[in-house]
Length: 153
Ligand SMILES: C[S@@+](CC[C@H](N)C(=O)[O-])C[C@H]1O[C@@H](n2cnc3c(N)ncnc32)[C@H](O)[C@@H]1O
Image (cartoon, rainbow, N blue to C red; front, side, top):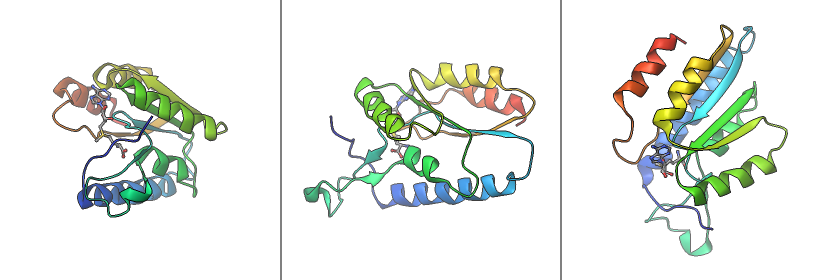
């Protein structure tokens, strides 16, 4: 099984923004009575390389969004849910989960537009979550965005 190859320098910029956001978010809520969930609804494979990656001949892989979320360490996220449609990537995510068996990682093989509303409906009063939407194209349904907004969380 191989990690996917996509994106470019903008991919690294996007993921750096995510890393900083998660760091700030978890620090801001550190002393609040909330249970924190990170849902990566278009999770990928845990790692990737870009077509113009100068190191690709050495098989150097970059850490994807799921790995960055696992690594948040100021206030580790309580629960991480990774949703992915493509079975080969789901298998790689299960390997990532097994290498971090103490982190409460749930890997779901499924469609983000079904899994996100189900997650939103399951949230308790003390749940707070970051839902990261990183599709390749226009796979996010408007009703999915509306379901997130309706939680007011
Ligand atoms: C841009 S990649 C995600 C990259 C990931 N954030 C990372 O940093 O490695 C988008 C992923 O969404 C998956 N995908 C596409 N449609 C989906 C859907 N409806 N539900 C869940 N995953 C989907 C694709 O298989 C692909 O792995």
